[in-house]
Length: 196
Image (tube, rainbow, N blue to C red; front, side, top):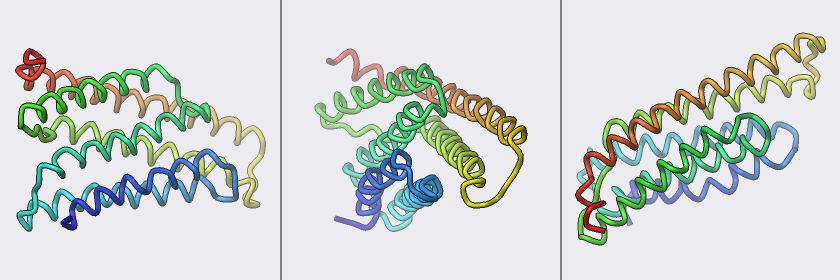
């Protein structure tokens, strides 16, 4: 297995640690989740660059890299819903898009073809990662009083409300990119839908 594919597998292996950090309350748990997510995001950036630069692009990588992104991002969004940091409707749209695109990829694979991600899929992933990093950062700020950084209750409540609205806006921006990329993906690969 080449280095880019190892990085992709490594990203998938980070997901349980990421989810555990978000869902289990321990000191600086959201900071741990943020650091794990950033590490996973760096592997996403590196695996494709290394594969293209060294001529190590494989069918496995073309399929597994976007799948690893989906696993990481959907895990984050579902944890956010569970923690009340975002609503479920946007996440349902994201799930629908991801299942649709994965179904098309599987159909293409059964016909011996591998469909790589397009620029819209990459924009979707970047917007999702920005939203996740921002939401985790906002949650870390809200935990500062637990670390002895004091600000009064009114400021805390205002920040909490501002962060909740900001997080929802970021999730919906990434959801719009997700829907657009899904529609374009379906249009570009409709031949695989008609073959099923």
